[in-house]
Length: 288
Ligand SMILES: [Mg+2]
Image (cartoon, rainbow, N blue to C red):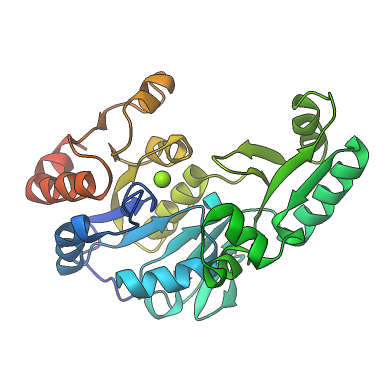
């Protein structure tokens, strides 16, 4: 099938799947400057950099412009997979079209999540507040985002972040059970709880690798992440790179085998590991 990535059908086709915050972007300054030379090298070698993040499509549309990375991307922790139409002429089954992109929804649609969230609050008799019930000002206050950024963060498609304001003496487990009865899942993040379907970064990454294989590429995948929600992604790639606190890996008890941990963390580690990989990539390919 024609697509502008081209390349020899059987020569290895490298793809980098990367988390953003704390990985390609610095945890504090949100800058990617320290990874710039490796990003530039990837561009020079036409190696796609697939951003795999918990952010929304609206947030990604702005970030992609800033980073000058226009490859496919994954939003809301694996809920949505987006592929630029310019780079992929014909979509596979199940895609719809939005913003010049093909979209595959691996997650549960937001309207269903919001409805389930309200039902759960009522059933449990708990006071909870979701993004769908917050103003941009409230979201901005809770997250430290600017109002414009908060507006983009609130444009959810596959995940409802929320706070528990009052649950009386009830155990947290009741909430997890209520979600499970609705075939949904809850994850506890740094600031918020999240209600979502079965999607995760690993399923979305695997799905994209399969798509590239279907269009004839001999894929060699590299994954870079810094925290626990990146582990499902690191489990499905050929080469896993971890640029976060190594304690997270100890806690994961060997879930990801053969993981590369550069000495530097965040974008600096990203730069180091990817430049090194590009220099030595023939060795990796021979091993496969
Ligand atoms: Mg991260």
